[in-house]
Length: 338
Image (cartoon, rainbow, N blue to C red):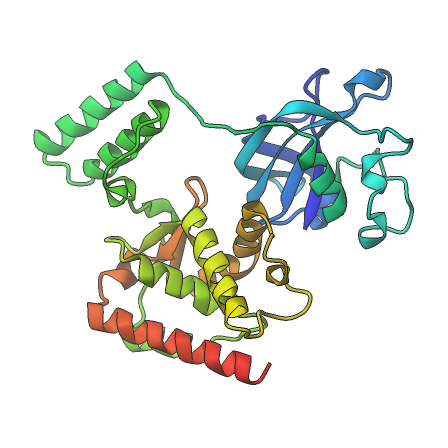
């Protein structure tokens, strides 16, 4: 789903937003925003026409509340536009009137709504006029990161604090990002995040039974499990961007073989679908569903998905191959009876 998030940047706001990080909104909008939605940032000013434009985009991540009245949405994969895109069309009217029938009954958008749906046609038009789209990176002070790294290393080597190695890996990853370095071994920057891991108390057989009995409205869940297994990582976690490439290749291969891709209303029917749309689809569907089982983990801050450590480290290479075969069989049955 595509949505517009109103965000004041030229004027003061009464909300506790963090630009390109979190979006603060009241409970009345809770049903209009979901994890996996693709958003467009909108700056609106009723008094100044020049301050009505679109200026960025991204994907809605985790949504949480502090008091059931104020809600916060974490924003991921954020991008800023080279060009501020005015809300107006050159021939008259508004960009958000494009394809409006797919999201509302009236042509004019509800400008007073802080969160509102937008059609894919309007979204594509905005992105095509945004110029260069630059990804945002959260860059902290290098010296501070170095200090944190030294403390963690000291705690690990001299303090015999084995858990400190997680801090070492996390801080090292932030330094790599801040310096725009390319690690030679991608697995070296992948770590497990204890605060996102679900406790695993069931047996290995229970995991296989779960996968054998997956409820499938679409083909997404077994494909995502296969993406993790095929990546052959040491910790069983992969970046969502890697899952995006895996999904794109999977459905492209089906198309090349002349096989049915998916249901007619599925985004993968259009092989030109953007990476952002695929990422949003993965977050909103298989990630959310698989997480509820307790066998999988999702790091919403760094956008990694995979098996929880308690599960992954119980699986031998033979187990992983067998689990992949279960997923292949599930997909064969799904497409056979579709």
